[in-house]
Image 1 (tube, helix red, strand yellow):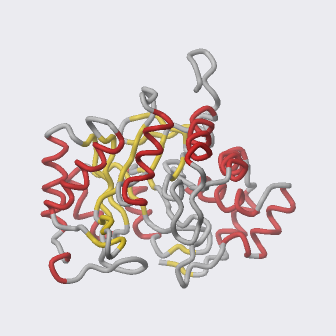
Image 2 (spheres, helix red, strand yellow; image 1 turned 180 degrees about the vertical axis):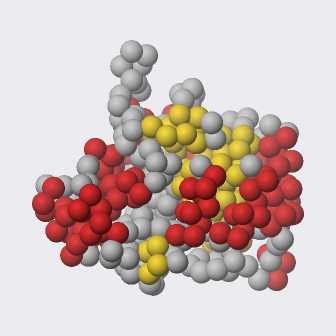
Length: 304
């Protein structure tokens, strides 16, 4: 672990999240325990990679109790506890892992509270720095139905109560519309996680609201995803051509474009490959000139 006096350079430079100074390139823990068709790495490998990420300057880690039924949280705890003072742990609520059904929604206020408590326990902390509410109103992913169709105000009230109790520090949103974000602003929203990439600008109106209010923007699926209608950024000719001209990888171009679009963009790329992790962090050093940015700006597969 890094020591005082040898603090590494912050990957991508610095920005602010919930009043805390964080590196703009962080780490997403979702794949640490496998799943989504990916094999789980050996625990020792996952732990070593997490420690390496922190040694490289990462101090923003995104996780959730429903990732591998808490196993990702346990790996983070094994790797990093006692946690560095500058580390910002961000979790997500709105779903849970059911032993029979797998991932299921958990949108009701009492379920949000239970998810927060479970995150606290597996991470071994008394307070979560940020908790993102993952809504389920539109695809991709699980869609709310029955008793899982829950009013946003009731959810926010529960999270505000948890914040007042000191169990969470700040509130974020995930998978929301611009209208929902505007409605939630009085709750003190510090960040938004929505799908967004050089090829998918559907959430552009949400990003516009974040710009208006200096809210941190944390795009997921930054390079596309396995879901239908999410094309692979790394396969687009304009991206591969830019990568070749710069001597970097297509993935680094896709990530660098996101950093260039908004000063409060924070990236949380995830991987189980240590070399890939270092490649992601190095994307923070990739400079795209104006011509390249203009070219990439013009290739969106969809625009919101």
